[in-house]
Length: 453
Ligand code: NAD
Image (cartoon, rainbow, N blue to C red; front, side):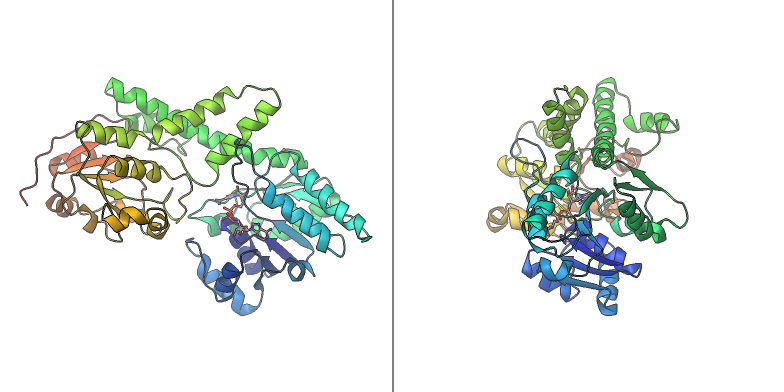
């Protein structure tokens, strides 16, 4: 099939590459010409495991190409996917300016009718607005035929995006037109060979499903974080409780890990947007507000714990920070809990030595001044950042942080204290090695003496 994907971000790039991998002819249109130039050379501007090699192979085979010109991208397209950003607007609702700008441009440039698909996360009713705008443009130019706009929300997870796209749990297709549904069914058939999990529904239901899914997952996280807060007061270990409740299949083991809060480009903005939608409809979104509030609080807990540990005196303290990206496997820093902690530590006068396998560059771009002054040091080595540290804080649980050589770390640190923001470490083992251990919703264990070194 001839496909055009508009937007070469996390979703657009993965979508375009994976469709090309299945033998489709794909043009990915991106408004940023520098990004297009890099992509045309096979240089992927984001960190996403497995994407670059697949993208290069498809570029070489000629199945995939990039363009900054919408007109050439859509010339032969049977299906056009819109995969541009929908960030939070000032009032928290989804900012649709990018999506609607694409709709206007399609109205000005399309020469014939075709199927347009919203892959961006958009509020209910957006497909109708996009269709109206495109069709008004076609009518103005006396182009024959009208476009149908379908909704096909994306559920990939950064860090495992290629795999998620190639082997989706389900594909949701919201399309009120039989021909459009059939086209999308054909397009997705190779991705669903093992299990046909293509769910067809109305456009508005598809649009809403994406928000409901993200809101539910965010709710699970905030719920377990609230439980962790109660556990901490009661001297109960949330990790034992997690195992206890996760074995109940009605609850399940996913998304019930206590931690220092969720971030990323989706949960925070989608929960916010759903709150605004509910308000607009006169519904009080009490649960969603609580989810948001708990998450905001959760992002401050590590700093509070550090401040308490140092009796309010963080000035001059050296803090080693492991993990900056909002989650492992990505360089995405949007709404990352690490940024809240980093900001607070820098404001309190602490020196921060941070390490992330993919997101150092993004942090360097935001905190150039702190780097220049020496207050912030970024390194690729988890061990180097522990040198002379008064505390080690784990924020993002990259694989390389899961089983480090703690004896070596103990020797490098000035004070052997670990704040485990994701509850991934064995507290007993750390205590045995002479560390003070503090997790989220877990009793503090061990004591710490200054290192002899
Ligand atoms: P992104 O910000 O990484 O990428 C968007 C890209 O679109 C940018 O490169 C931008 O330059 C480009 N763009 C904007 N306007 C354009 C235009 N008129 N023409 C061509 N290109 C244009 O965004 P993303 O993370 O890929 O998210 C895209 C959408 O998918 C959002 O609605 C998001 O909520 C949703 N989504 C994201 C994820 C995720 O994990 N990132 C997962 C599922 C759904």
